[in-house]
Amino acid sequence: MRLGGTVCCRDISEFEEKLIASRFRAITAPFTCETPREEIDRYLEIIRKHDILIAEVGVWRNPFDRENGRANLEYAVRQLKLADELKIPCCVNIVGTESSEGWDAADRSNFTEEMYERIVASIREIIDGVQPKSAFYCIEPMPWMIPDGPDEYLQLIRDVDRPQFAVHMDFVNMINCPRRYLAAESFIEECFRKLGPWIRSTHMKDSRMDPRQLTTILNECSPGEGTLDFVKVLQILDRYLDAEAPVLLEHMSTFEEYRKAYDYVAGKAGEAHIRI
Image (tube, rainbow, N blue to C red; front, side, top):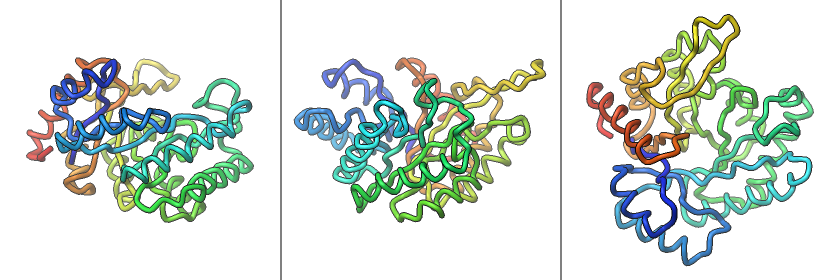
């Protein structure tokens, strides 16, 4: 697998230095469809020079936002078009919400039949608006939003019914209850066994629950700061992903945080005799 993450830098002037220092073999796109083309070309020159895979282009905008939903959906179309042009395998977003509390909020409407129909229609509209040949539009699972488990993701794949709709794997986001948390490695195996053929990019992080709290609180955290057995997790990924598959560390804000997480995962890969 190609272990990587996001290169934290102020601008392109320090991008190459930080990219080399990161040791990443896969990264999130450091540009968007709104980046000037000459700047995109400069990034691409550096990335190709060092044989780095751009694993995904992010959308991270809510197509059901009450004020900006249409503009956000059109942005998703443009991001998917950019991914297809540059042969980046994954253009990723969450499905979105009707909530006024935030673009990724937990809301009662998230699981209604009416919302599900809107979700399917919006994904189809984005893919049909581009008709990509190499890139795939993917949805990142969320604990409180469709798809919140592997079976729900399989159903979404069937209902969207588009060959360029695929899977963005974030197993920690689907560890959303004590039952899954307490049997985490078995659940992660289930996720990859069921969704493996459609996975285009994977996020890697850890999970932590406070057993002293009667009301369940599950938090994501950096690898090594939770309770996942990363030797077992990496063995699962190694069974279901090919050697060039991107696996990205995420939700860290500094270079040092990424370095620490990379060192931890690389060490566990060594214990498991897995090449990264």
